[in-house]
Image (cartoon, helix red, strand yellow):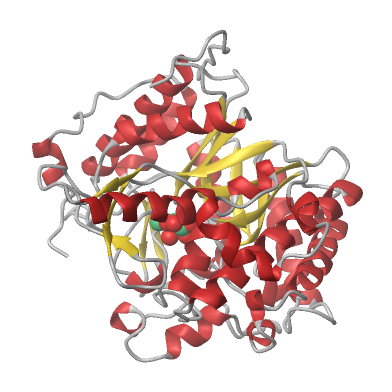
Length: 466
Ligand code: FCB
């Protein structure tokens, strides 16, 4: 690890300016899929295709946040958070993705933002968390260069409508994940596995990011802008040279396909040649427009093996002695600390941790409480790792837990519970878990409950067989 000299020692104490928050996304919590004029997104269609999502789950009702947002903001108030990061559903505000806006959809976010502000919680808007309007997909979606203009127009609508009350905007959530899984591997909506589609999508998402930055800078006074990346160490899964090469290649797609052009105005070597045919003069300057912070979503390091897919690499198994969460993700807080320091060193920007958290097999006990000790152990270990990174010089100014509520976890459906608050989906009853109380006390700094450190034994409590 490179030692960073002279960096500020951030304090996480109350009133230090450090932002504590929670994150959600539109498709995963809102529900109300066919209400008040919302259009379909690619995920609505994907959920309807047999075998795509576990148990045939859909986002039709999700957490019914569209109707229960007041109750959910009250839960946030009880947590004592400073900020709430949510995404706008593009097809709710523009049912066809472009053209006529849907006033009822826009009004929902007015109500949400006003409720947040009245509760002393700062809204952080993410413009795109994977729910592309179906009508745009039918025109080629992220494979069509015109999408940069469509995205800029959508951004202008959002900026004009909410820019008087919101100044924190993220353009995209995890562009590497939705391009690779949606266009490269075919594991997520829209289910395409094609190298050409992947490379077009990567470039057009980057262009859309740059176009949105320009719109936001012009329209929103004191805008504070960033993109949210999923970026972490990619280790070879096995000792052979193929896995080592695959891990390096995978990292260029996963870690560099977006930050590299966005910060350095060029593509990493593995992508440069493949993307060249889609580039036009001026593209790279637009893509590399200035941002104010780096949004990091962190869950796990990757163990990569060679594979005959479109990029020649895929996920392998973590070492057998590494504890895992119920979704099978390795628990390695050191990789979080290392990622934060690596980002600090490479990009030299303020970092906000815009997602971190864990799935666990939560169920209410006989007295109705949800004692998610495994999640508390996880969050304790990861916030400690963040503090270590800050002590070593990383300029981390905020941390958002994924997620406020148990929600629709993409192809895992409702089986994987990531919330600080338990949701009983048949009744939509919310039950704050023990981890919600723990997080509230971490934020107020009044009481730091002692919790088990992550060890093989404590991790077994949250390790599943799935
Ligand atoms: C991230 C996604 C988020 C959620 C968490 C668990 O990759 O951004 O929507 O699914 O994983």
